[in-house]
Length: 193
Image (cartoon, rainbow, N blue to C red):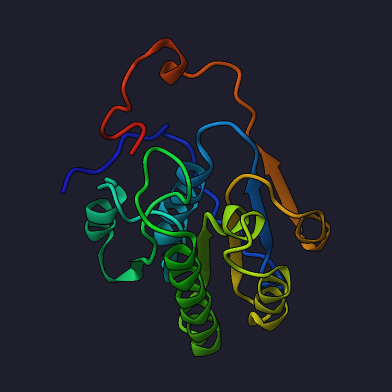
C-alpha cells in the first residue's frame, strides 16, 4: 500500500493524560451529518479505535458506507436497521414498521453499549428517529447515561432534542446554504449516498 505524502516535519502524537468519552451531536438541516460522523470513523480507525455504527433510519436505498467500511477492516462494524426515512421520498412502510425497526435499533445500541466493545459508537439518524417518536426521548437519554466513561458517542440527524443538546459535550449544526437537489440534480453516488 502506498504511503501518503506529508510535510517533512517532525510529527508529534498527542496523548491526553485522562481519556474521557465525549458525547457529540451533529444536527441541522444541511447535508453532511452522517458524512461528518463517518469522517470521525476514519480518524478513530487511524488511532486504532474500535467503531460501531448503527443506522436508525437508512436501509431502503444502497449507501456507499455499507461497503466502504469493509475497507477499514475489523475495527468498524456497521448495522443498518431501518427501512429508510419515515414518511418521505415515497417510503412505503408504515409508521408502526418504522417504530418497530427503531426500537430494535435501540435494543441493539443498548447491547453494544453494555458490551464495552467499542471506543466510538455512532447512532446515525437517532435525533430524527426521536423527533418522529420512533424512539422515546427517555430511551435515548438512558443510552447516554449508560455508556462507559471512555466511550465516545455520536448522535446524528436533524431536530436534536434540546435535552440531548444540553447533555452533549460538543454540538455541531450543519446548515444548508445551497443544495444541488434544489436545482433538480439527482443524488450522486459517493457524495450523497
